[in-house]
Amino acid sequence: MSLLLRALPFLFLFATCSPPSPEEVRSTSLIPLPADLEVQRGFFEVNHQTTIVCLSEDSAAHQVVSRFGQLLEKITGFSIAQQPEAADNAIVFSLDAKTGVPDEGYHLVINEQQVKITASSAAGLYYATQTLRQLWPEEFDSENPPRQNFRWQALEIHDAPRYRWRGAMLDVARHFFTIDEVKRYIDYLAFYKMNVLHLHLSDDQGWRIEMKKWPRLTTFGAQQEVGGTTGGFYTQEQYRELVQYAADRFVLVVPEIDLPGHTHAAMASYPELSCDGQTRELYTGIDVGFSSLCYQKESTFAFINDVVDELAALTPGPYLHIGGDEAHSTPHEEYVGFIARIQQIVHAHGKRMIGWEEIAQAHLDSTSVAQYWSNQQHAKDAAAQGATIILSPATRVYLDMKYDSTSAYGLNWAGFTNVEKSYQWLPDTVVSETQQHLVLGIEAPLWSETITHLDEAEYLAFPRLPGVAELAWTNSNKRTWSDYRQRLGRHAKRFDAWGIHYFRSPEIEWQN
Image (cartoon, rainbow, N blue to C red; front, side, top):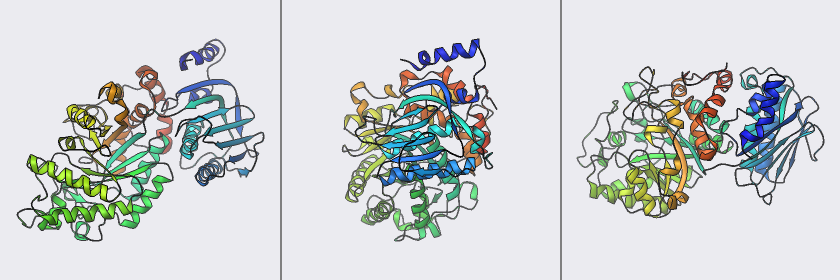
């Protein structure tokens, strides 16, 4: 039964008897839209007698439950005891691989006696807690929550994601973002059930990750950023901290070192990486395509091997992103040779190579991933080789594109991208029906040429980021713009509680 049909009795009740309660409104304002939701009569009240239960021996599941209990204590002021067995007035988490619930999915039941969450993975339990967060009053997510009891609307949800890859990219190379700023961005992703943070760590303007074997990459190459202001970089210890912070929220960090182009900062740090060996000043503009590592030197590939070696050791996930885009200064044959050798190097260190769509011009094996951003033919060519695909069409999900001509930040080389345009497209149509299994998912890049701090990034990301999250989570046949814009409008209270500097798009009826 469709969501609309399930909701009709309650819509009729609301229309004929009384307006919906805040709990009922929040229950039908979830983003991403669940696969199946049935609103029911009644409420579950969280009070000073509420307990929390974890019916699993799995350590990751216990970590999810413990953290959620701590969050409940913070927002309510109550001591939420963890009990070994389910009882009334309890929030019960059950992890069972034999339940039939898809990986990352969950089954949530709220009634007057209990809240019951069932999943086949700890990630599924975690995403259920993010749904529960959306169901509690928005002010509970503010810096100073009211610390009192509250109610959840009775309902039942069966939910699971459409795609495995639900990502966002943050460019910390053009302008540097601090560890705390990146952590806050991770929090936003996790809240909307996104599970990948792609960090663009190097570009012409700066190198942002410490490399022990090549220290001048950061002692010199990280000094500046676009506009000539002071840059910065992450030590390896800070990067590990960031990776763990993300992992605790079921977000995978994928680092990108852009090769063989977008490498001016590296060549300014080590002139021997260029073919002419000349000393270069740091670059603080925003033009692209003018830099290239030297293909003729074996020392270039020794450098690439060292960088991949250190990144692979720092990053527990299976992927390393090697860029590969806009290498306009690299002759085609050399470019193809670069990608072939880098692919081998990445494999040798136990990782899968991701690159921007241009890598489809080289021979790719089935472990590699091409990230489509502009030329749809590249995506099809990569899929024809058996490589998997990430969908990031610039005209739809590049969050650095301006909303319209009045936007305070952003660029418009891919056109203006308002909220509806970003949401209203069909991921299933990028490659053929027979290649759909090769689509890993969707990612929303945020390039930082025009933004310097997190509040400016928030302006470009919100309100478009939740729409990308829904594109990646919810099947296309369940989504409509008219329904989504209403649900999004109700998230204004959440944005305000978080203190997000968001763009109040005139397309949306914001309900503050």
